[in-house]
Length: 109
Image (cartoon, rainbow, N blue to C red; front, side, top):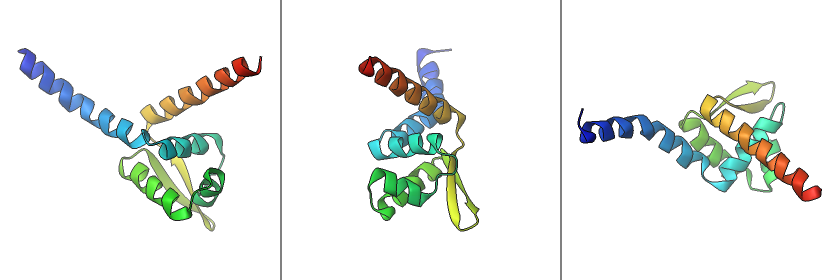
């Protein structure tokens, strides 16, 4: 197999990860994912209040996360709640939250 064909294979394999990283690379979207991971039943109202952002801004970011298959939503009574469904991103967010926890413990000590 030539280097060119190996490179092409990697491009094809890396493209979905690049799209996911691009989607979570925005600070507001990363904050949204951290909030979703920490809350039991996060709805859009909870998210925009926590982030002190207008509801349309949060909804737009959630739409990008949904379009890339990172989060999903379901209606529970009168609320639309969100969850992280992409295992790669879910693991990444968990690692980020653990690193933040460790960093805050070091800073407090």
